[in-house]
Image 1 (cartoon, rainbow, N blue to C red):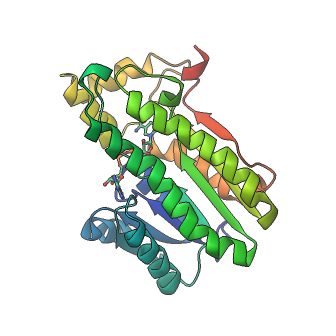
Image 2: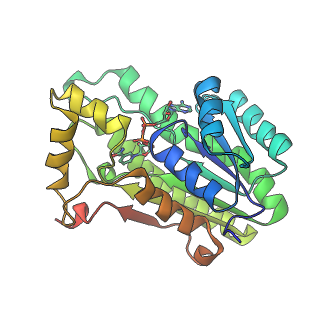
Image 3: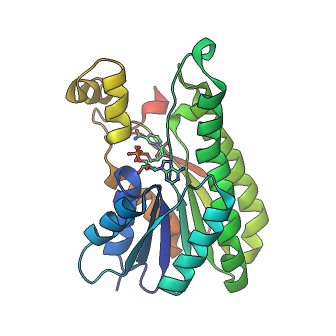
Amino acid sequence: MGRFDGRVAVVTGAARGIGFGTATRFAEEGAAVAILDLDESSAADAAARLGEGVRAVGVGVDVADADQVEAAVQRVVDELGGLHILVNNAGVTRDNLLFKMTEQDWDVVMGVHLKGAFLMSRAAQKHFVAQKYGKIVNLSSTSALGNRGQANYSAAKMGVQGFTRTLGIELGPFGINVNAVAPGFIATEMTDATATRLGMGVEEFRELNAQHNPVRRVGYPADIAAAVAFLCSDEGSYITGQTLYVDGGATLV
Ligand code: NAD
């Protein structure tokens, strides 16, 4: 018996990184999984990598596009037979100091993180409310608390926390839990790209960041997946509107 037997989970931005790690965890615990990502073939490849016997589908969608989101969610319901869990994980960075940040840097980051989470949650809630059951987890970040060069990303990730609290209030009476997970440094292609942009080696950058938290290691997608899975399990049903920092204690110091 898995915790998610009979459940259908949608994870956005799940072709790689934290999203793929989370999709893997849901599949291991019995869920049927929909991997949503920008490129349909990458999403389908990732769905296939979840393993034999796993009911999974890969769907190409830009989460910042309302029509594409509506179609993608309907396709998941049609192909996997329902919808119970939504993880708003898709994300991008467009880092720059304020004086160099372009309007496009701002709009792209707001579009994917904030508008994307809004559109996906709005499309999913129809199904959740009708069945009086649903779980939403939104990906925030320790950068919500402020991070040099990330005015856009920080604003979006703190916005995600306010969005989460408000949906917690609105959707709680319908049996829907809405929470956020705020990762610290997680070893993925997103942070590898930051290393490259800063002119550092990937391992050097990870080692540097490992020294910035009390547990003295970087995080991995599985660390985030474990927290997301707990919040989406029925053991977490009295928790809503919260943001759980999963950061090796980075925000303590
Ligand atoms: P990643 O760059 O490895 O993966 C992000 C995925 O999102 C990619 O597959 C990408 O194609 C997809 N995506 C981007 N824009 C999209 C769109 N418009 N529609 C659909 N899919 C889209 O990133 P990651 O490190 O795995 O991060 C996942 C989430 O966790 C993001 O929300 C990120 O902001 C957050 N986060 C990451 C870290 C970290 O250290 N890696 C820390 C805190 C928060």
